[in-house]
Amino acid sequence: MAVAAVVPLFGPSAVLEDTGEARVPGTEGITFLRTVLFGALCVQLGEVFVARVAARVPGARDGAAPARWGCWAAVAGCAAALGLAAFVAGGNLVPHQLSDLDVGGLSGTRDGRLALIEVNAFVVAALCARSRRPDSAVLPLAAVIVAEALRAHPPAEDTPLIGSGLTLVHLTCAALWAGGLLYALRTVRTLRTRAPEAGVAVLTRYARAAALLFAAITATGIVSTLRRMPPGTVTDQLTETAYGRTLLAKVLLVTVVAVLALLARRRLGRSPKGRTAAAYAPARVEVVVLALVVAVSALLTVVPLPIRW
Image 1 (cartoon, rainbow, N blue to C red):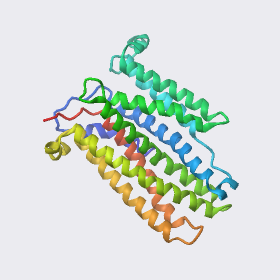
Image 2 (cartoon, rainbow, N blue to C red; image 1 turned 180 degrees about the horizontal axis):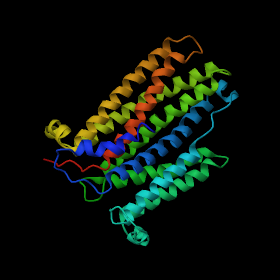
Image 3 (tube, rainbow, N blue to C red; image 1 turned 90 degrees about the vertical axis):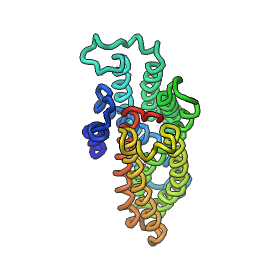
Image 4 (cartoon, rainbow, N blue to C red; image 1 turned 90 degrees about the horizontal axis):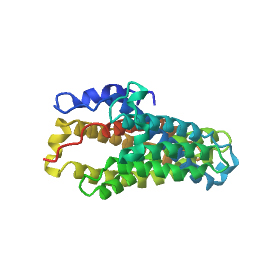
């Protein structure tokens, strides 16, 4: 996440340079908060996903599972959601003092209600993570994803429900992919001395699911892009608008991730039984690049939307 923090600091200025587009007040801070929110969602949802995958691997059940970070992730997500709610309460302006906030008015606006849903959902997710059934955090996390999908496509947009549906699938698959890989690698590391073959099985099963997740991410991403930027304008807007430049950076990073994933999977298939060292190195780099993808995705939600020429 330290690497991903570079994006909120320098990303907005880089993508907005010479575009003539207006900068949203507090772009850097909002990008940082959304990066934390997306990261928290990935970590907790990925843990639930891979923990269930590992539960079906006999050897993995006999070994010690890695400590879960879900509760801390939910706390971080709640803090980020509170920061974003404060921005909405300030009239979508950066609040400089408490009197600038209209907290009571949050429930009176669509964006305010969605912000409150996210705050409360992360609170419940943290409580679930500390309970005897941490996997029950799926429900409040689903509420966060739904709120994000609705927030990204306001009613004034053409066919907002279609856009929200695409974002719902895209964000869910991305969180499972990124967060799942992190927990899968932590599981492999925990099992490497006690049950290395089980670690290989967990990583292999995750890789199979990740291929399907990647296909869904790609499909929904392409359709969403064409909804934002008609085919005839894509080439120009990818270089001349902040949204297009950010999207181009995301596509390039995802391409790098895909290459690393293929390399890791190829090495995993060729490694001796019970050996994951060959696949572990590219997979670790993949996690770092995915953190950058999360940050760039957060920036994509903050920059001005492209003009439909």
